[in-house]
Amino acid sequence: MTEADMDARHRARMQRKKAVVERSIAAAREERGVLLVNTGNGKGKSSAAFGLVARALGHGLKVGVVQFIKGRSDTGEEAFFRAQPGVSWHVSGEGFTWDTQDRARDVATAAAAWDRARAFLADPGIGLVVLDELNIALKYRYLEIDTVLADLRARPAMQHVVVTGRAAPPELVAAADTVTDMGVVKHAFAAGVKAMPAMEW
Amino acid sequence: MTEADMDARHRARMQRKKAVVERSIAAAREERGVLLVNTGNGKGKSSAAFGLVARALGHGLKVGVVQFIKGRSDTGEEAFFRAQPGVSWHVSGEGFTWDTQDRARDVATAAAAWDRARAFLADPGIGLVVLDELNIALKYRYLEIDTVLADLRARPAMQHVVVTGRAAPPELVAAADTVTDMGVVKHAFAAGVKAMPAMEW
Image 1: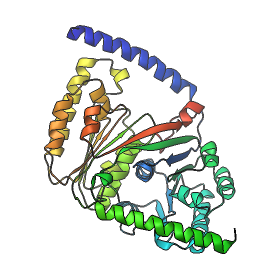
Image 2: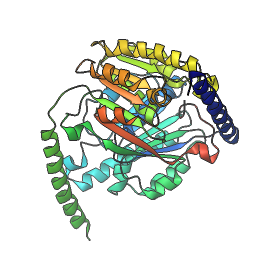
Image 3: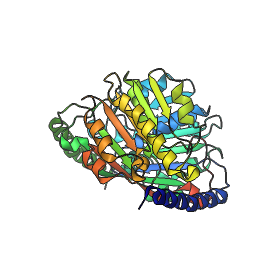
Image 4: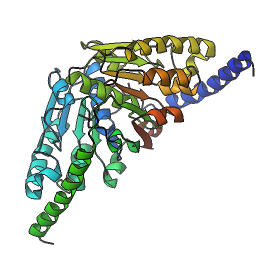
């Protein structure tokens, strides 16, 4: 195939693609807050939520973040976003569930974190709410799924919410607008690389 | 099962989990820059990369971003990160490939963008390089995979790189340390919701 043939084929392909894209865009007319769930075993669930925090701030929205499972207290995302105007950042808990090993304490901690989340979800001045690792709190039944769903449903119409964590419960997936399953193809950690700053925390 | 039984079972389960986690952490000792690839058809590939930009800035690293496919010029991420000290943000191109419909121009644009990427990849003062939608430029063969891999391999030892875009080429997946396939479970756009600011751009 000559260069001119390649160019012509490319142009024809892109014209067809443009028509498809334009039809999809014309069909999507509804404007409202979106409930996004990032789940799966792969890397990217929380970092994608933090990318949306930056995106929201770039559009002048206010953001509320609740981290339901505290891993470490020196993360790059917390240091960076706590310093940004327009961000309320709340870290809950005292460590990973395998560190506390105390279910009653974890349940009480999750309840307090949900109170904070509910305040964000009741505030129309907040354009994006991030509920980081909420799926873990639901998986261990530290929180009731029905309570969570009721508060999500009652939120302001234009407010976006991002929920992260492995093993999103099916009821939450059903209620969500957009759900991504982040699958591991490979991970540096399994190949012996430490959890590197800027990459994993 | 009584509450006390549940608590005891939880504690035993978490003790086993803690042992597994600690063995994995002890086995991962290598410290170096990681090559991360975010691919798949689902939402989150670019936003996860932008989350790592925030994370890197929180650790005091400098960041270079090259966007290989320009969608729109008013994104929240660009507005937000261009205003941050420590970020160099370069947007390449004149629109989606289905807008330009001009292969020769797209090839020239991609080559210029790769020159910018190569400058970041040669600079040990930059801790994180984001090559957003590079996979699309590779998929359409606007860039040679061998050139890209050679420059990635030659980068400073502690520099992290994130490549995003659907359909990552197998050679890039082979070279990467961490690869996530972001799968669509569902997407608001398909249900008729517009691409909302703060969520999709």
